[in-house]
Length: 277
Image 1: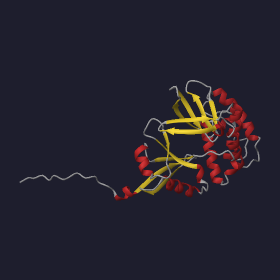
Image 2: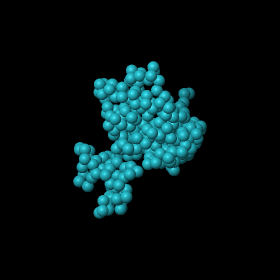
Image 3: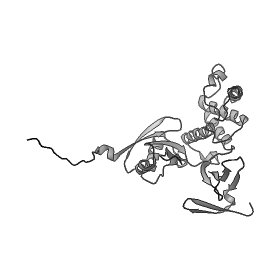
Image 4: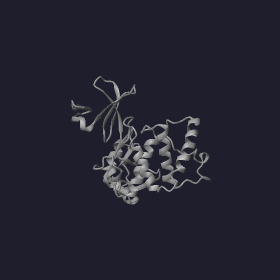
């Protein structure tokens, strides 16, 4: 006589996958590392794993970030003291992280480790190319020449021509027209050739020093609303707070030294500024 078995449905777990977390971390040179961690590892454990494998000895300037499931903010920072898996399960599109500079500096002498300095240079270079740091054509040419010296060493006339360099990403994305880029490339080749003998590590340092002068250096920007409900870009940096209307070019900058009080109530921030400002 035929019969049926009614089995209770249960979730099937792979014991290994439940206890082990494999994370892909994109480095600042666009290569990736895979980190194998325990399921209860913190963000700090992951950062330590990455920095140890890179022989990077100043991890205090760096953090890990990921793409969020939510439309805003699209990029979130890993909270280093909390379990990593819980954060990624709740907020991340995928178990993929990116190593990035979390704390920017005002004194390049603080970067005493060569590997840390090189990664810091790559982050600042990325900020320039993505247009986060605003620069004019003269500054763009100088930065590009330092970048080439850092990557290739001394200029080789028969190799490092404008034609050869045209496919390299050297300028901020807002510099876009073909004629504009062509003229700038010729200027870059000349500037690059003048750096003959400059050590590659020193070229990285000079790049950082030049980038520190640019508008937007070390700034993280958020969408917000002012007291009138108008949309503004709120930029925070090691120098202070920058408030820029979404529909306009004027902005107001408040230095940290001028801010006497900063109050947070849920999603609202209020700050009081010294009258002597």
